[in-house]
Image (cartoon, rainbow, N blue to C red; front, side, top):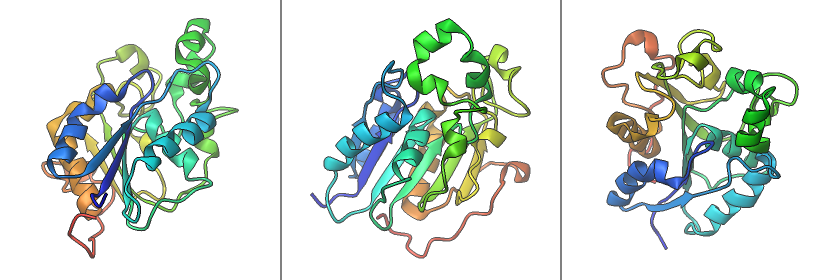
Length: 236
């Protein structure tokens, strides 16, 4: 198998179906795509267990000797960061994180006190907060080219009230940031549907291929980091 590899990791409470549009787009470009499912609301498996139990399954389906690129949504990005605390990906690999709670989730921090939330979101939902026991805040930087796309439009005002500044209804713009990210893009979309927007899919493809976003039609105030020019414009 000599095709370039793409691994997709969905968010909390979702399935691989939520990333089907991205899956189809990469397959049309002749990538080998693994749309990896996992029990994101497991009562027994936390973030560490999910990362080390399911990411290797996806990697086992990828061609050897080629980069393995990741596209993640929400919790999926935290699973990738957890896995890369003790593992590495092949040289040339990149990742695009969509709406990742990289600085922890204020919503999860408040809601985890509620029994219904704990029952619905399982063990991972208790680990996404911003206080004691926060997995995102405990993770160390990883050696990977990362592009982050997050939204600033909310369809969930009841959650937005818990978030400081611009947010997508679940994650604040500032909360999606990661210190060593190579590029960062803010789009006017909500947390739950960001992955289904055509522009987001196209920006994701562009980063995987070139290592930076196009930032097309994005105002200067939203362009938080300058794109780094890639020395290799061909797909890896």
